[in-house]
Length: 195
Image 1 (cartoon, rainbow, N blue to C red):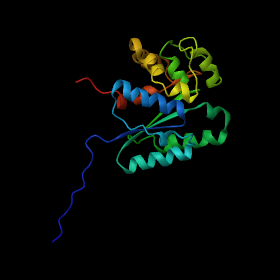
Image 2 (cartoon, helix red, strand yellow; image 1 turned 30 degrees about the vertical axis):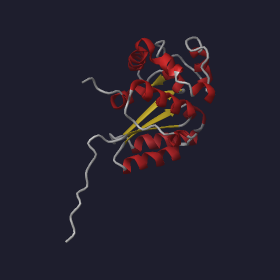
Image 3 (cartoon, helix red, strand yellow; image 1 turned 135 degrees about the vertical axis):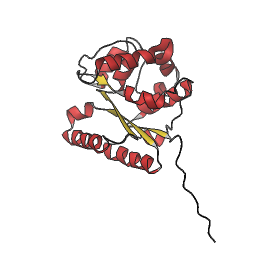
Image 4 (cartoon, rainbow, N blue to C red; image 1 turned 120 degrees about the horizontal axis):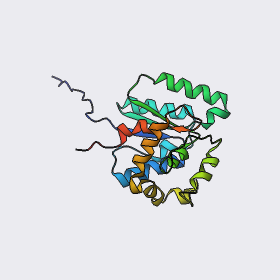
């Protein structure tokens, strides 16, 4: 007689961070190691992916009953109409799925970093424009792997409770301005609750 094997649901589904490039990958890898967050952040989830690749990754995470946190630079929507349509389609597809959290920064994740230092939603045309402003606070910031792979730049972002400042600034700005970041949508999933 065969035994009936009961499938079990994960009590705490795995949270997986998925993004477009190296900056996001290193930021979330360092953030995890510095603050002890419990999420999956693998290099393969950040290999200069396009929206179709990211959507395939999301489907894999969902198939494993996990939670997918997708990080996007949305300056691409300003430039490429095809990418804008794909991104909007993806957002619509997962709009009512609590297991998919779409976090976007306009123009790029570097704007999220800038919010650690100042409260602004002024217009930045490109990530390079944001990086120029960010250099005032992180003078050596670079998108080169030799810089990003070192943990100290993220440690600087976290010093003096600047993560809370960024969350507060992003919430105050909202998503109506020329530049914004809703990375705070991920904080509910990534930042452990006080016990």
